[in-house]
Length: 409
Image (cartoon, rainbow, N blue to C red; front, side, top):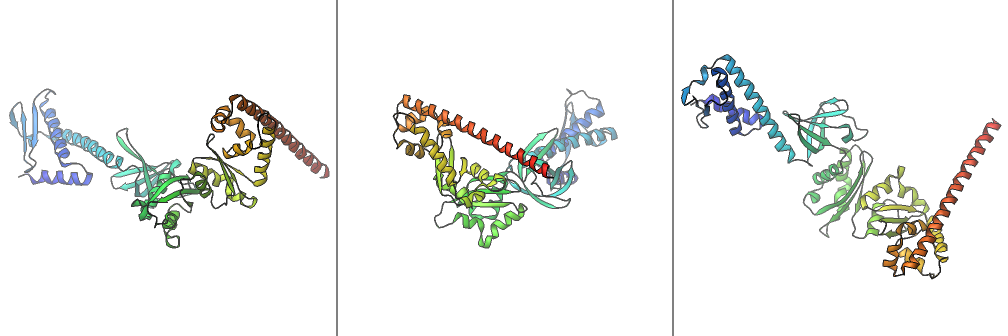
């Protein structure tokens, strides 16, 4: 019984995570190559090698006659070694690809190995390396060799005779997976993450819902004294996370998504996919957020275009719309209310909606709808001219102010 062969196969199979049968087949193929090298046999010659899977005994034949594989010489042994290395590498590559392609979307732990031109090379195991591209790294984070790091497997590719495992810490699903790890109710399906919008390194908005009326989805995600959300925020280097309750009502959901700002009124126009949100003056900066981040994330979370207006701005748009409609023959005072109910609050909205929705939703004639749209187009042009004039006056005033400062200095 050849225990050495069995032990070698066992060790290779365990260390490289390769199926034993594949290792046996690789050994047999390597010995066949060595025999062909030794005998100078052409590819079509009949050389076979078989290793007994239970005893490890090797039997070899050339054209039906037995040969001693151990007496093939040093050069043939070198050939066998090279073939064996090539085949084992191919098997190992296939094994790594098969393992990690099934794990796409999972969070993995690794150790920072080195930087290569901004790309972070991460060791996932002694035999597996992955890369964290610059575009998938959170802005402002720094990492050092030897540091432990968590990331999500974004993609797995078999290219150029190697397996490329691409990681991400900026993908929105990275947040989703962190919640699954930190909040048992999410992984168990009691709490569902309905929508998620993220600007990595800065802010994330996440909408959650519960399948159990007894479970508060927001409270469960935050945890006792904020313990659960704190773990996630710490993992993300301080990125702010807003957890908002999901609602089937678009108006309620938009109001929730704009938190912490308080909303006074929401007008939804399904035709345009737009929501006009009215907020008090003191809530305007909160609703818009720093560099427009709050309203931008809310729009992505809800899949609605969101316009933020103060009450005076809203009233001014409605008054302009009312004046425009009042000029059209055959339109009564209640028509403006009907437009507002459709979420059309300005002449620009009316111009963009067009004729067809007015005919279908308000049950008016095509001719009347055409007259209304033409009036809206004329009012929109007038608005554009006024804005252009206002801008020109503003620039002129700025120029006068600069000249005055120069004169005084």
